[in-house]
Image 1 (tube, rainbow, N blue to C red):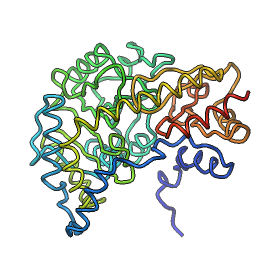
Image 2 (cartoon, rainbow, N blue to C red):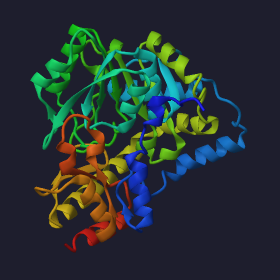
Image 3 (cartoon, helix red, strand yellow):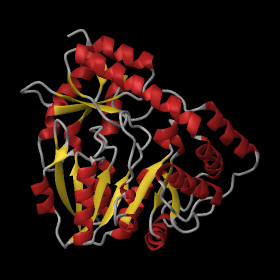
Image 4 (tube, rainbow, N blue to C red):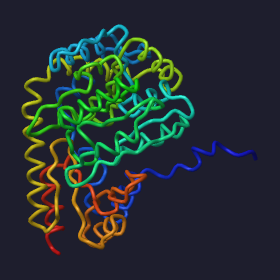
Length: 380
């Protein structure tokens, strides 16, 4: 038989799948994979049930149903004073991951240089490899996860086609500062590159509000903003995401989308079109709940002897390992001996070895789950 695609055959199993499998095998509490162990709001689920009963069960328009695109655009205007035309500047995708893939395939030609901040969500690298891009990593340095200006300046040049930023940032919980974003804006204009801004944790911020990349001077026309409902509503299995940007860019992203998934589940779009317009009261309790979970986990881990880096956003917390410890071995030990699964962060790096000295905890779990994990971890 002839060879298969040599890029795809070299892909390894996602670290999230690997650690979840180990958690199941060892009957460990799973604080590794980033999804809630509780359901999303019942009123949103009921909206989907009603849409199913109302026969919204055939193909949706490939761009997404207009009520959902309009609701997305309305929220960006209301929350961030950003104007997007729902007719041609908003594309509904099967979660943010598909939006990321389609954006990369739409913007990047083989050999184009793409700057990524490490540690990074693993789908970035896979998509870039499929596009045959030249990946240029820039490290966010622990413990505050700032980039070095000289390293960034060295990475970016006139060949740079795209920069990928995740803000708030997974896995570190970092929120980029205004100074950091202003420098990125200046470099984007000077070197004429696009920005893919992954903002799926936009409502999971604690001490400060999220500021979208597209709000910075001269960035809206060159930025593709990607987000989703999975994190904000705790309904990760619904896979409703979107890409926003200039109409010419969105049209090209749609060209990829229409030949991959074509459209997103129709009844779930109907439900989310209504849910997005009723977020104000919901977000108050949502943010309060996750602030409590963050504080519960961070306090408990510190008391158990971990060196935890308090996250400003997302639902993840990083911990620095003791000297001489390796992240993969340490995570395996935690699973087998302490019955708690975490993520070894070296999987999110391709240049620096900093990841081998850190692990990631997810606190998108019930308080009962978090307390049970902390109880296991306290017996050192």
